[in-house]
Length: 288
Image (cartoon, rainbow, N blue to C red; front, side, top):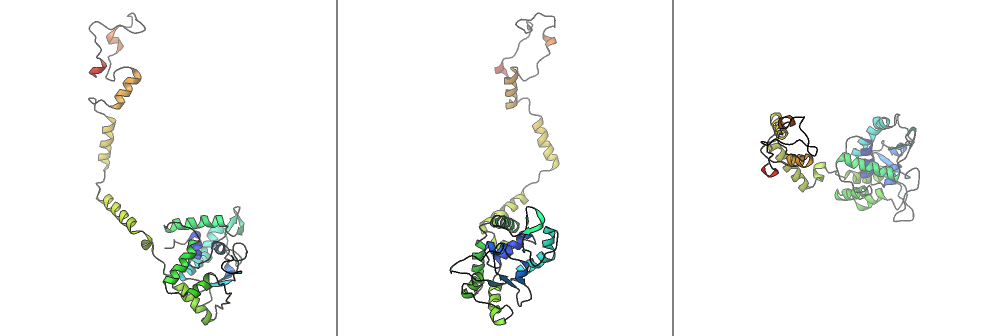
């Protein structure tokens, strides 16, 4: 479901596999990640965007929380730390850098957090890379909760990951506290791109492919024949081009004999035209 290793795919994985809000994804720094915890690494979420307080929801205050890192997200973060960050920002990351940073007014020496607008743009790019329909970035939060509950995770454990309204302090080095959170994250079963494709759309694509495969290919010889037939129209047929030429010039479109064959240049002109010999007759327009 996730696209290959790109900056946008790292941003999407952070949103989809942690249940974080948009501002929380934009505010994650490398110092917030601890991969030494077992069986899964830990992400300690304290702030959002550039250091703002976490969004208040359900309760008067929302406490910091720790989120287990899904194996698919761990692979994305490892690539980002190893080479992805340097490819985009021309230097190695530091613990104080944002995981997915952006250049301030294009300056490489100053990396800042993504805003709501730039984060939405990055999410839209991630959807295009993965080939899925873009709804909203906040929908990933609902997707995380839904997939975790379908996988068998307990409601109170999932709420502790996404909200932590009670302010429970979790020690990710203690097996008793950390194990249930890891199990809840591991309950996420990511669907494949084939499973996400609507059945009708898949059948329509298969039908179009079969039609194209059965169609007779137009060879180069046939193509030139068709082109030559258009360049040399049948003179016996009255086409639109003949009618337009006749209306524009006021003369029939068939070959007209030269003026010298009708009257010599020294012949007197009547009303600016050469007189026709007695034996010469001009066919009427109805005879064309």
